[in-house]
Amino acid sequence: MQLMMFLVFVCVGTFPAVISGPGVEVVVEEDSDAVLPCSLSTEESSTAQVFDWRKDESQKEVFFYDSGIHYNNGRIGQDEQFRGRVSHYEDQLMNGNASIKIHNTKVADSGIYRCIFPKLDPIQTFYVELVVERLLRDRSGEIPGASKPSITVLDATKDWSLLQCEVHGASPEPKVQLQDGSGNILPAEERRGRYYVTLNITVTKTDRYLCVLTQEEISHQSRAETFVFISGAGNTTDRNVGVGIGVVVVVVVVVVVVVVVVLVKLRQIKKKKKLSGPTGPEAEQNSNGLEMGTLMTPETNNSHSTAQNGLMTLTTVSELEDMC
Image (cartoon, rainbow, N blue to C red; front, side, top):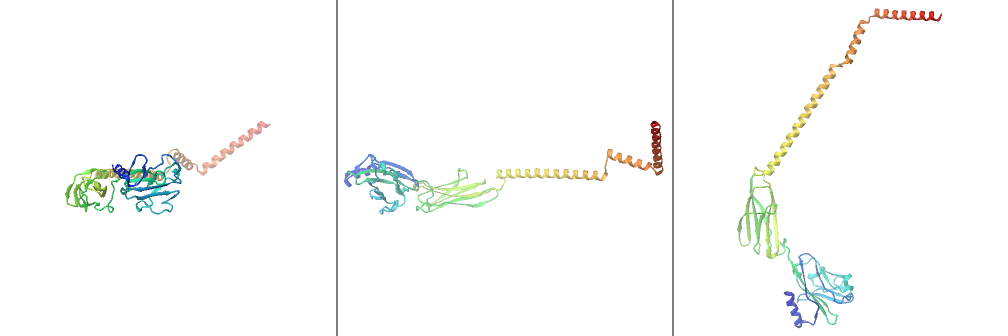
């Protein structure tokens, strides 16, 4: 609708122009880039042409190109709002493409833009409506009335904590919520004044808690958070974890004790065997040897030697007789 009204304003004779084609609407999100299209229908080269981009009735200078000279390479006169944020498509000029790109768009960039070829006969003008949609983000310090919340622990025991979420100086009136770490909205006791909101809640679970402020009218959202640890019996998760750890410790201690006892017993048995000496066949053989050594007296040894000599003599005489 805004584009149509502007076209009517142009057509009643503010300046002579030929409107080439219908107006185009471009919608982008804040902080993104916006491409505003403008091309000659004949697709003739725009390299040696002059084209001028202006905004709204105030005719703010957005981008001006004249046969290779423009605001980004030395030409002066660009409006401060667009300085350093507008570029064109150098490699597309030969195809008649005079489109521009506005970088990092702001809500203030919304409006009607004109792409004018002033040296054509007749003058050709293209219209583009740019709509920059606000993002819901933290605008505190950027917009008056965009407040920041706070969250504090007022009181606590081992079983619960009392939290307070506060917002001061908020205008327009904000929506304030308390949420847990999963984003669930928690029921809380609320008090409101003209420019402040206070929420109180008692929590019984270890978790991360957030105080979230939203002001839709100015697209402002801010949050504060805190971490609460509940150590009491009501904290079943922590209790179960503690029990599990205790069981593991007991099992490990028992295993270590059993291993130590077994090792001590084995060492005692080995030491006892060394002190008692050899057993079995080896011990029996040694015993027999000792008995024989006891029975073999010197006289017995001499008799045994004489008998052996006699046998040797007899053997020698018998050999001699055989030889004869």
